[in-house]
Length: 337
Image (tube, rainbow, N blue to C red):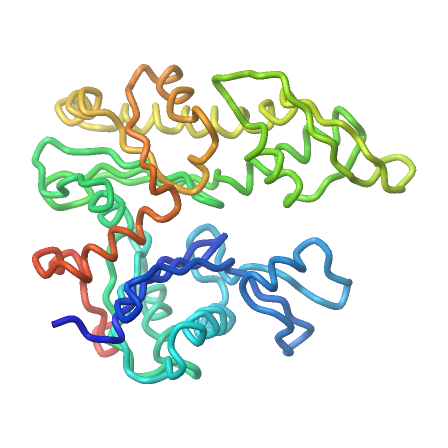
């Protein structure tokens, strides 16, 4: 029987995804915190509303960096704040299933354990599921297949490539290119072509509204930024070609890394992957036609997941609810770290 306080948690650099068995519902909030010194001003979506608008004495940032917990104390506050909205007494014993990166050190594992056994959350049991396994289960890929499958997750700050065969991740690689780098590349293109400085939030809106890659439709959007020469606010109409140039620089880097990754793959496994197609997921795959663009670049078909950033969360939900899948969750005990 499922415990009432079972949670599936996917900590990302951009957002925190949480599944509650008690509510049978998934929740998502921005993984951000606003602080003035040691005083917390806002957490989650409220903190994101302050991002790039905050005064000099307030810091707004994510406790995660490239998929790794950078500040355990602040990450615990974000998670506790989110749990409080679901459960009025989240500090009591719970069972936490985390989607985690591959090849974590003992120190990084201890961070996940301490995250839910620290100042705000206590007496929690911790289980870890490797993120490629969670993605595979969400996309109905059998991790125990002997032929092998390839999962590519394009996230907020990094892209993770993994090959799963016979129940194990045999090859994996992570590169520091993701949605945030695409946003920054758009900012750079706008600054170079229009002498206009825009924020990454504006760049993200342009990316989602006009990013097309394979379908180069002529579009334009009006934005407000700071003139690079005068330093005064200015309106400008931004072309979709400028936005796509910024996105393509990053997507081409990802495609080149996938090509090198496939070249390192054993020939029989690579042959099966080329026939089955590469499974593509992650929040940054919301860009229209990104799967077609990568397929044309590499000459290999892609199977795009419609779960996007919720892929790992969906995999955790399956593991929690289906007993036969619990074997993919490894318990973490403090005395073993």
